[in-house]
Image 1: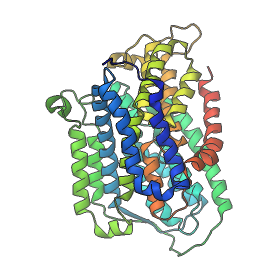
Image 2: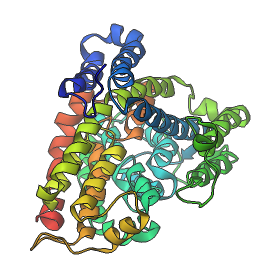
Image 3: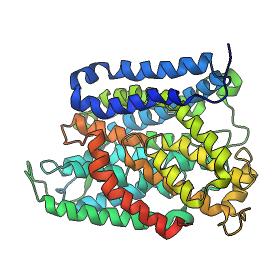
Image 4: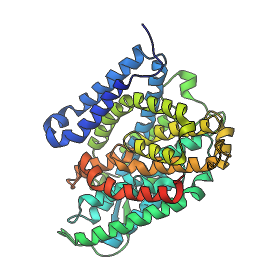
Length: 447
């Protein structure tokens, strides 16, 4: 049997088909989709996995790496979902334009310390509670924009692409001074738009009134588990020299980090405050749906990512700063933004004659290397463009970043008005986010 290095273009079809099913299933064949979405997702993933296992020269090793990435993703999502489900936050005031905007801004800041996933899981339920009776689709959308994505752009802990860059050698404190200005402009603009929309929404049907006051928290013990999860994120041989790798020692598809996170999830569920779980209407259905859909997404997007990586590697010298920004962003909105970041990061390094496998080269790239192309900007601007695009554009669709889909499902579980896949893109992300991202391009990356 002939084995190939580069996947054929047609192998992207299962990924496109899965996206179309996710977008149209809840609208046009709801009952079928609700009953069989797991079979559809896994089945399409198996088609791609079989091709890689039997036809692609490097297929088995790539499948193993994808499985490791999926288990790492699932461990983080599951542990944060369970731990946050045992923390009941009650804000003793009703939602309004300024109160909601303040909560979104706090969530944006918090996401840099506990990640966009952690901040989203902690705040989505209290955010929905204080707006009960007046909650509209745009409330959910702006939560995803600000807390689940753009907010986490200031530290490597904030969003997976930046953490991958940190693992490759980007200094931990490189991100904040380089990205704070695009962050401030975008978050401020989104909050202003949100306040206007929220003011126009009015008070709605206020089902109950609460005294204006502070914040009460039930289930505080779970903050300890949350701290364990965040610390476990750094338990990686790329961060701690000599740290044992279960993948290398025992050929397992997970490491000590993932093992700790799964153990935390199990332990937290057993010892969580029952009043907090009940108050949050906790159940595993949102986690189950995300787990099944993303196993298909991780598998089916392998050929798309390979083709993108090959293009970035072979055409990097021809790509300007503008093209790196727009291509990284456009693909981060429909593919997982973390591997998209890595592919274009590797391509940009190659343009400057550097190697992503060398931490010294990565550090030099981040600090600024003169471009081999006359009149071009230095390397640090390429890293800023790729970092901003991968994090910010992750808000363009539900599948651009992991917490987006989780927030959507938690809201749907609470019978909240949730925009569909296409409605989210056409009604919100394209008309609201795209002009802001174009403004960022004009101000910072128009080269």
